[in-house]
Image 1: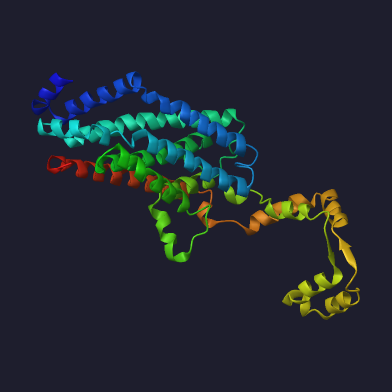
Image 2 (image 1 turned 90 degrees about the vertical axis):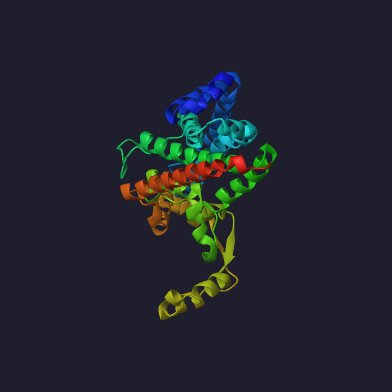
Length: 348
C-alpha cells in the first residue's frame, strides 16, 4: 500500500478508485467486515418470527412490519460505514496530500458499500421468506411485475441511503467515538419521524420528508397492497368484550347522544321502553356475529374506511419513493465528498 500511495500523484481517478476498492474488499475478507452479514440475518430472523402472521396480511401488520423492515435497513446501513472514514482520517489526510483524489476515495467507498447493501438485501429477503413471511401473491401496481424484485429494490435503496448517511457522518466527525455518539440520535430521528408509525403534530410533520424510513416504509406498504387488506383491530377489540356487559341505561345515554339515533322518534321510544338497570350481555351478540362470519365483514369494512392515499398500490407511488431515496443517496455522497475536500485544513 505504501508503494501505491507514492504512485497516487501520477495516477488518475479511475486507477485510485480501483486501488481503494481492492483495499476495501481485502478488509472485507481479512479484517472481518463480513461479520455484519450474520447480524443482518439475525435481525431479519427476529422480525420475520414476530411479523410472519400479519405482515402483508392485515393493515396493521403491514404498517408495523414495513416499519420494522425500514428499521432493519437503517440499522444495517448505519453499522456498515459509521466508522469507515473517521477511523482512517489521518491516513486519508496524508494520502490526499500525496495526490489522492477525494472523489476516487468516496467512489470506492460507494461501490463497496453498494456491494455490502446488496448482500444484506439478499440475506434479508431470504431470511424473511424462510421465517414464513408470505409476500403478496397478486402483483397489483408493481413496477417490475415481480413483488420479490420490487421489495428487494426498496430494501436495497433504503439500506444504501442509510449507509451513505452514515458515511457522510463518518466523513465529518473527528473520531470513532464521536461517530458512535451521533449514531443513536440519527437512529431515533429516522424511527420517530418515519411518518407512518408515530402520529406527529402538523407543525413538525414536514420533517418526515427528510427521513429515509418514510420512503422505505411507504414503498413497502404500497407494494404490500395496504389499502386492499383488512383491518383487524376493531373486531379483536369486540371479541375481548365477550364476557362483558352494559346496562340499558348506559346504552341509552350513548345512543341518544348521537344525532343519528337521538333525532329518531321511534328509536327514542324504543330505548325509553327498556328499563335502565337491565343488563345486556355481549356474549350472545359476539357469538352470533361469529356464526355468520360477521368478523370477516367487520375487518373488511374497517379496512375500507381506513385506506391511506399515500400507500396506494400504484407504480407512481413506488417510483416516487425510489426517486426520493436516490436523491438522499446522491446528496449524502456529494456532501461527504465536499467535507473531505477540506481535510488538509483540518487541524484535528
